[in-house]
Length: 278
Image (cartoon, rainbow, N blue to C red; front, side, top):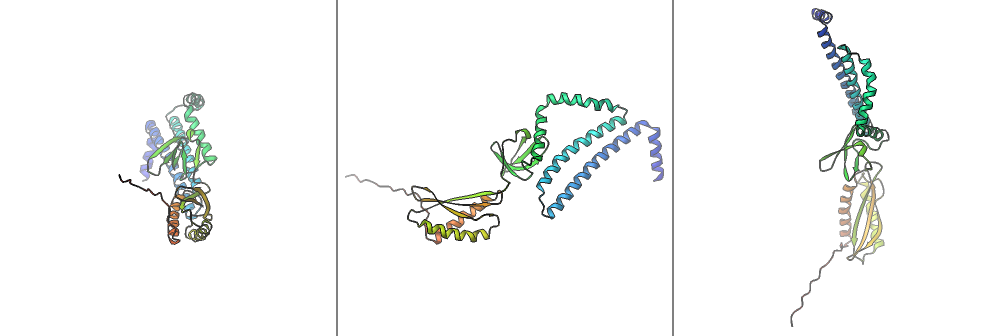
């Protein structure tokens, strides 16, 4: 083992080409190890945060953005170090980066706009990974948030990628609460006050078995007069994006309650009459 390192040291001293190749490989290895170490630390922190039931979406969003920036920075430094190993004077190259950046900036204004917009999206906390948002009529879950683009996945599975500068206006459905709204009809002869009182009392029991509901479920009263009956509205607040499941269960609940009260849901009737020829 000692002989191996001795021979390697002699080759590095006596063979300039081998020395340059060896140190170039070492720089690449160190670069990849740095990125791997940072990514491992991020994953370990995420597991720890999830086990402690901490909010991890914000950190996950920031970590992806900062890791993307770190990757570009590490590889740029690695390239400059390798160039210096091969005898290239990197000082003029570094000084020329300003001029090159100006030229690239003039030709890639859209890219720069996307990157600036990406920073503002993250640091102003417009949305995080896992949030459900809607942009230009497309509604989906945020899968990726990078320096240049945001990836959304529709509930049907297909994916759409937006440039960060085009993520406006954006509607975030994952903040605060969602509103569940149910409408149903009853006959005109129904005692509305009594029905409202009975349903509101029953809805308190319904809420106790559904932790997704964060406010009282209430029958607001009569909202519209229809040709076949009276329309009533029921509403409640739910945890973000859980209103659709609660609405489905509430419809079944209201149907059972109306059947128990022997109240028939009105529907349109068609009367067909025939005239006999005299």
